[in-house]
Image (cartoon, rainbow, N blue to C red):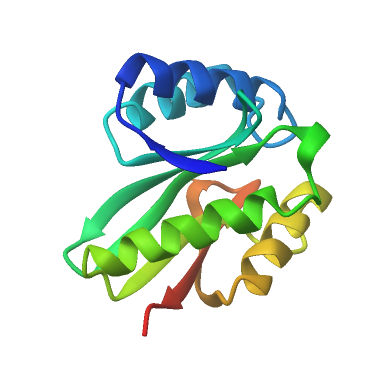
Length: 152
């Protein structure tokens, strides 16, 4: 089950639980803390198995036409069980109802790290296209790949 969460403290609680289970992707404490805090003030959607939150996705508006996947995660126990796909589908429909024309996401460039290669393949399977790589936006060890998906 996917539902939108409105309570800021519940958003922080869910984000913290999920991100702490994913140190391969969210292993820098100050950035993880930033994702948790900033996610609490943005449109936030959580996936549940029973009463247990197992994943989330957060929308950040980057222009009047573009919704960004600000942060997304699913606890490892539920990887490859269609939770991420369900979260993304819910996010995509929400973005369409709000009138966005594009979805973008930033991740580490394909070919740098196995974990992020899996992330890139997930987004490509969801219909995203490579837009541009910014080699030093984050740092030289983590080239920023921007992927986009038109909402038509």
